[in-house]
Amino acid sequence: MKNKYRNVFWFFGLFAIVVMLLTFDMDYQELWHNLRKAGVWFPAILLLWVVIYAMNALAWYVIIRDGREARVPFWKVYKLTVSGFALNYATPVGLMGGEPYRILELTPYVGASRATSSVILYVMMHIFSHFCFWMASAVLYLLLKPVDAPMGVLLGVVMACCALAIYFFMKGYRNGLALRTLQLLARVPFLRRWAGRFVEQKREALERVDAQIAELHRRRRSTFYLSLALEFGARVVGCLEVMFILNILTSDVSFADCVLIMAFTSLFANLFFFSPMQLGAREGGFALATGGLAISSAFGVYTGLITRVRELISIVIGVALMKVGNGTTNNRNDGESDEH
Image 1: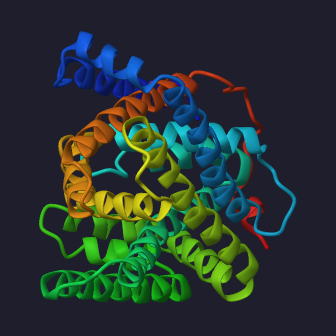
Image 2: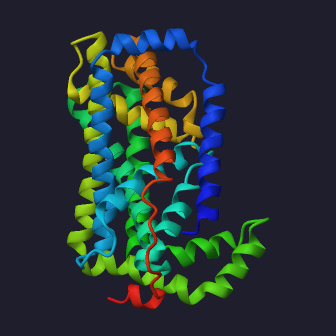
């Protein structure tokens, strides 16, 4: 990627960090007190996320490789994973900065078409694993907790929505998604002209991207399911963060409870996808989730606070990494790098 484009993403990330610091809704002395209260658990949480990001990066890396020799080193994929998530965390609506950044940075290694398809596939896998995690968590709740009528209705709605989403994702994997998505955007007011012109000019490239998406599911099942397993596993490992934080306050919380708290919180927070860092929604989700499991809601608020600080540190690290390890790479012909 040219430095001038990289700097646009970098300055955007830097601006988002400044805005978040200026609008942080807590006295910094109180924040420091809470971090001291966390003790060694807070560094443990940061190290945990080194592992989680490694699992995310590996899930994307196996898609990029797709059973072939890697043309991009794993450390580069790891760096782009952390920086891409940092941009998405800081962006309202999400997926507005991290994905274009990843595509532009990966293109010199594998070509534009393959870079685009791998990023689209990974984003699909990342979102797909959310629905699988929520579905599994709903089943876990049914197995472990008493269910009254209102909760039964809520779980039924969640499971039905997750099943529907999983069906559409599998259909997208079988038939491709890029061209259909842009054709759908071509019917949206204000986007109609741009999307229609883009489809007209790039139809061949979009069809090639869709062919690569369908190819992964049809002929590279091992790659598909390995990537999904890594993403789903990253969600389960991420539940340890909740357990680490709650262990500061109480020892009466099981890992299964932490899975349910994390599932409900992520579901609640994603309903407020339009908010940068899902400000307020994440804390509210933790408070409601812990309260629903007969755990003090104050524990949920504290968990949300520590999680928010960890996310802010992750964003700072991700934005900083955008200026590191950007050596020159020989540009590849798009068609050359996309052939199977």
